[in-house]
Amino acid sequence: MELSTLSLEAELATIAESAEPGRSAQIAIRHWGWDGRGGATLEATGREFGGITRERVRQLCERLAQRIAAAANGEPTSLPTPVPAPALERALLQAAGAAPTTAKDLARRLADEHVAARAFDPEGLLTAAEVLGHEVPFSLRTVKDVRVVLPNPPDPTADTSEVIAAIVAAARAIVRQAGAARVRDVTGRVAALLAVWVDDDLVTAIVTEPADFVWLERRTGWFYLPSVAKNAVVSRVVKVLSVAGRLDLADLHAGIRRDERMKEFVMPEYILGELCERIPGIAVEDGRVYARKPIRPQDVLETTEMTLVRVLTEHGGVMERHALETLCSAAGMKVSSFNNRIAYSPIIAERGYGRFGLRGNGAEARSGRAGDEAGEADAGPARDDVPRPGDLEHFRRPLRR
Image (cartoon, rainbow, N blue to C red):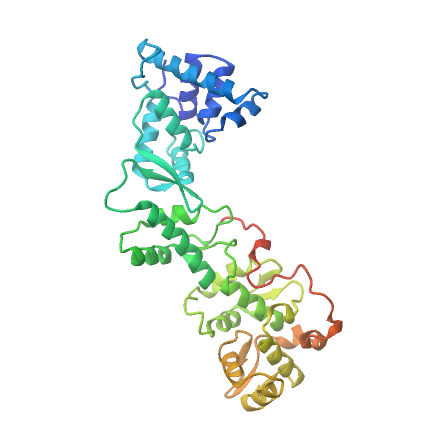
């Protein structure tokens, strides 16, 4: 058979059909993953082909494997010599050069290098190498819910699985603490933690694996993972917008940065804008950020922050520190809590020496809503469509950029 010009899928299908044409070949191709979609279980394959039993699928695939062996050396019961398969050989070389990486990344590479007609799941490479008698230079494993391609034999100088697990953990930790992350930040943290050299390409392959991954800016490596709960930046954005109305992106950025716990918040203003556009109910327009629907402060602020909002709202929005502290103390706030909030809360802004107010154009957001901010009984139930700090499972699925 002439295989030199065929794609990987076509080559494997030709080999299977040459050994046993028809339905049996199609069943084996699906079960083995030779169609590039990844292997299917015996049960799933049987259902797909009209409800035949698991045992029958197993028998058909075993018979086909024996006939492929016979086609190679004329002895049906002996182990096969390598069956000529140039596309498979190129694919195995690609896998050897790419490892370690993710299964998804290798699948894309096979298509990009025109070895396969489309992304080809490496599960099919493993079964093809086994059936056709070729050596396999990689193994497939799942590490931290990520399917990865590892060198075979393993690298004796490094525990690649440990590195991959550390990449997953570091990416999620940085996004949780800093709102978003850069590939180089993840690389640096893992290298420092494990005292090993870490490849940026491997980090990129690992962090882009989740279905909800989104680039905020690919050129500089900024990315975001909406599935990470308790995102510190997102919670502060929502807090500020609960009292600010519309505000400049620069003002929002400054509010987040004043919090002493946000030392890892290093994203530029324009990246913060990209992040805000992915928070449901929040929009960015002409450099200004706003909530599409008002966010009730009592839904997202802590008790001490609510006290500050109420006192400032009742006294014109801006006050001298001493007067503000006196009224907050009278409302039951401890001096230590007041000092902490006035220094670090993102909803507070300095309005001249010794004077403080709510961040942004607070009057626009608060007009007619003093009762809500005070938490009165007739404020009504919290709306279900308001994003809460850390409530990330309700984020819309962002588009990749």
